Length: 214
Image 1 (spheres, rainbow, N blue to C red):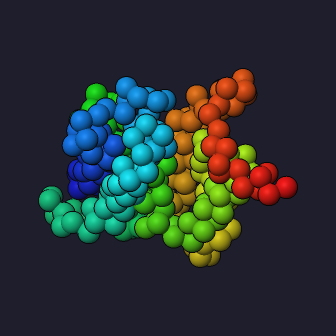
Image 2: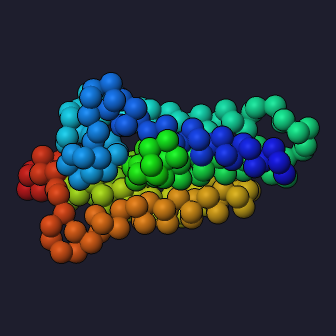
Image 3: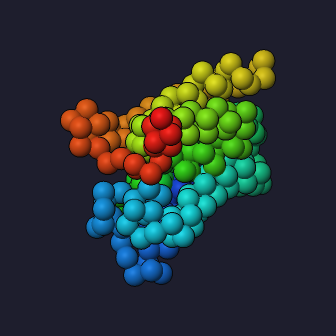
């Protein structure tokens, strides 16, 4: 049990390495004081530029991959047999990394919204969900121009996708983590949904390809 605890903690610490804040120090900026104030890829793009945003997203996805893939492969420190299968441990460590991204211990617990890190985790523990996630995200973005709405709906699509499109036998931990990730993305995007309801949500007009072609 102790090995599962330190692995989960390591996943959280990996997740706490915020791409936008680490790279922002190299650029001499703190994007939490710019734009929407969120330390994520969308605000990085709007506030600093596309190159900075790409690097941020790569770091955020990468740490999700590392937490879910590499941490469970580490040798046990206490010589215990883990109470969960390797995919389940990866899912748990990955969830901890997403939590670390949202509430990073290194940056005063003020981080991003967790979408990029969640993608990295899902790519490892449930790769069959990536295509439907991307399809939902693109359709909503191209149809509405709302990044937050696209991310929330893509996150919610994770729950049916993990059972309907995956192998016959799914580890219960994967289902629990899928639900937890969907709920977490819904929570971290609550301000986007509130602005959407009030009609004040920022929209990427250039992304509304479907409407512009009508």
